[in-house]
Image (cartoon, rainbow, N blue to C red; front, side, top):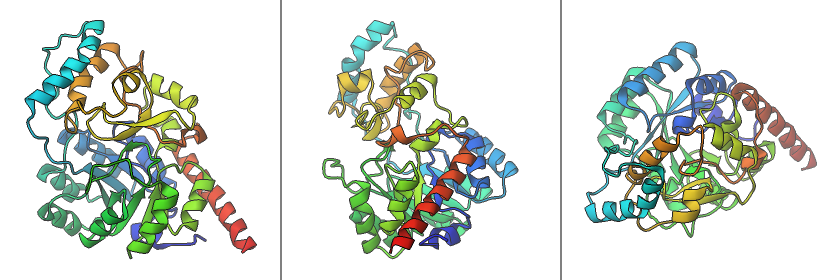
Length: 361
């Protein structure tokens, strides 16, 4: 029924729709609902301590026997740069003063983000997720070998053809072609220039032509039209993130939900002011006044250490001023539906469009 069945067969899923593993935004309920609906639920674990990751994986494994995707980040530990840290805190000082935040209070040492390590690998071996995905490249060969030995299929994000070829050469089973439109962090890892990054429409067919493994299209895909277009470009599946933020299962703070409901095509920006790496978010006060791209922001993920006290002070229920609100350029196409229902509707509507296209041909 689908033009390309490789991802469905490779992952053992019914529908070639991957729910993006969006860190704190994704609940175990969402992962279970998407997988039970026939898609691939994705559990983002980069923001989870080993204990939290174990607890979430345990819940998911207890409630569904369908394939799941466990996602991790592969960033390197940031270099110690006291001067840059001092400059960053100096830039944020007016906000600390405005909110009455003590600039000397303890800050998160990891920036709230965990890189894939042996402890993460041990969780993969213990819970054996059918798919393990990475962002910012891949872990070192020893860890990657352990992941593959667990039986997991390995995928990672590429923002360029060069990155896609590199991932295939390292043994990835499929590659996610992440277009410029995508919400959240850019998966860029072989370079740091975002000004020349390609959009999904341009990137996907070039990646398809460059690699032999299946390609998963991501970025700006939020409805059946985007899914049908991705298959027309040669993709074997799609990964959808922002559309799932509208679901009741999403852990999205009220101010973020309110802005999503009013989203526009030009309402997002790529910014590094929240974490130190380019990420597409809804525009708020911090992005407007400090960014969107700031050369003062420390290396990923330590920029967040400076933002964290501001977030804690204003509380996410009250203000979006300092909150990272990841979202893609197609946010305005979102629908408030349960995650399982959304997955099924997207698949049915996309198949209808694909049949129409086939009939025309």
